[in-house]
Image (tube, rainbow, N blue to C red):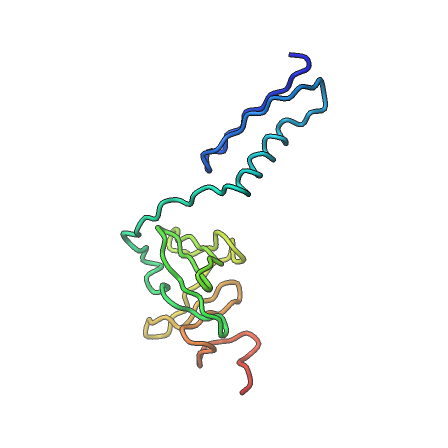
Length: 154
């Protein structure tokens, strides 16, 4: 109808929607207007996170990876959330990995797209983790594990 623009957008992930009705004959970017309203709503009234569900089974490729790992002297806690491996530093999620087809691949954070390799000793125990040249060890600067750049002096 001349002189009128309308938009209806639904964000199914956040269970929100917006309806925009605008008077104007041309040049009204109603799609951008609707999207900006949804963004503003998320900024001031964030969507509730999904309800926590306990992980019933741990994928076999993640069993030896759970727990505390150090990148240098910085501890990270690796937990299992469904089929995902989540790394947190000071309780804040920093990396997320998906376990698929026997591989562990970054799905969010700095290591998205990188494969996390579980490096084992001759006896089958886990030596360290290697993700995109980041070496993670059970102890800070653990002896016998390759540390890019070497160990700190002292």
